[in-house]
Length: 367
Image (cartoon, rainbow, N blue to C red; front, side):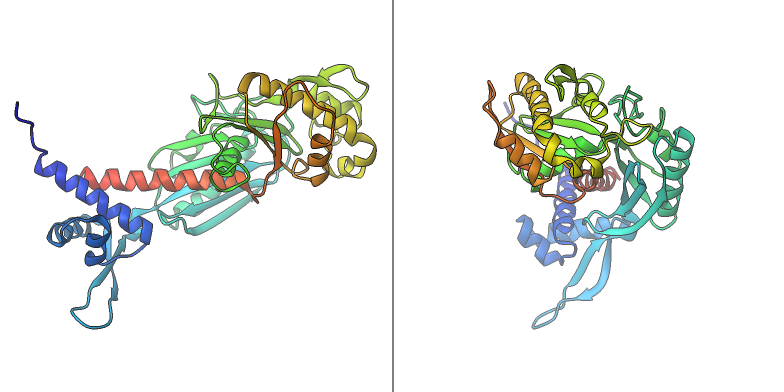
């Protein structure tokens, strides 16, 4: 039975994708360089570059090759290809950047916030920074990191008991709709941190691990078979209410450990990091037992190969030493510290670049 041949339109679309991916990896290339990298004939590459330039996806940079022979023109993505909005929403404020398909930050903006500011103020801050960036470059998609729990279906932030940073039911997708032409993806900052750790950090190449965020707030991300698991509503890893060992050996919720030891910031569930560090000498053995109780729960349900300690104080060497130097638990796991600065933003940024590249290619090949 004869097999059907791919249509000319499909072949052109496939060639255009190869050309765009080659340029995205190298930033600028001549037609001869593209042909060498892709293994596609020079005439076919020339036709593709001509199509993509005419449609406004590629642009002649004005640069030429030097040396013997005919000078070649360098091509790159046109400025109109746009950028991805990457933003984090934290108690410190909203920090946002516009990132192009090469991973370069082309613009940035910030807006201050305070703890428990509420939905309206947080929405105004997010809209303000997005408006500033949209005024400088077309925003084709957005990836948001939030320090609150996130509903996986809607992208809304979720209010849970004992959460230290609350902005109500903030809906980043709706806030960003006037500024972003494509999809808006929202996830918890701990999940983005775990993705970054697997790509470039302490869990690089590890398919099954837990990222434990220990800072002003408490959280965890579960990576299984190389993917961050989010659960039915997106709230996997909300560990504040895991039952563990209290300072006197009784069973309590993890978050209650810090209330009972007077290590919370005034009038909030947020942990007082400075006070905690000042008291490592007398409280760290009991705290290590409490953390180990949380880890044992994670081992029982996720069976990780590794636990990565992250967050403001989770990365402290004293915490790692206390956990690894304690008595053996029924099931052991290896511990390591996070090595990345701002892993939540790094994880969100890497995903945003992938989404932006895919959007540019889809737009180009559908024309």
